[in-house]
Structure formats: structure tokens, C-alpha cells
Length: 83
Image (tube, rainbow, N blue to C red; front, side):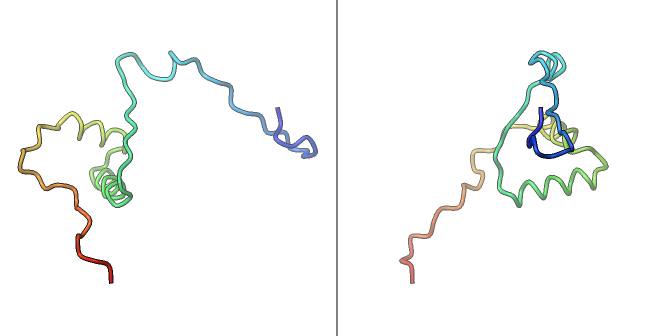
């Protein structure tokens, strides 16, 4: 299969993998949208830790604990009138 029949370099799509072969047994995928600054911070920390990003994130999740109820809330938009 090629993207452009007029192009001499035929690029083929990768063969699809079976769903059961995508992950080892007992693994799950986490999709979490995060602000870019937090993502970049986590990437830097994984690099500084000498860990691949996936291993770093898995370690953070494994070491997680409940967050106290008095945690800071998400910033609220200012109620001051726009100038």
C-alpha cells in the first residue's frame, strides 16, 4: 500500500498487531492529559533519575499515597473585572 501511486518510493503501513499482543499480561495503559509544564517537569525528573519515562511514571504511581484533604485547589479564575 502506498500513499501516493505517482511516487516511486513505496511506503507501506506497519502491519496491525493483535490487541492481545499489545501489552504483557497484567499491564494497563494510562492516558492522562496534563499541562505541558507538568509533563516537561516529569520528563526532566525521569532524565535526572536515570530512568526511562515509562519506568519513572510507573514508579511514581507505585509509590503514590492518598493526598491530604487540605491540598491546594486548582487555581480559580479571578473575579476581578477585566480591564
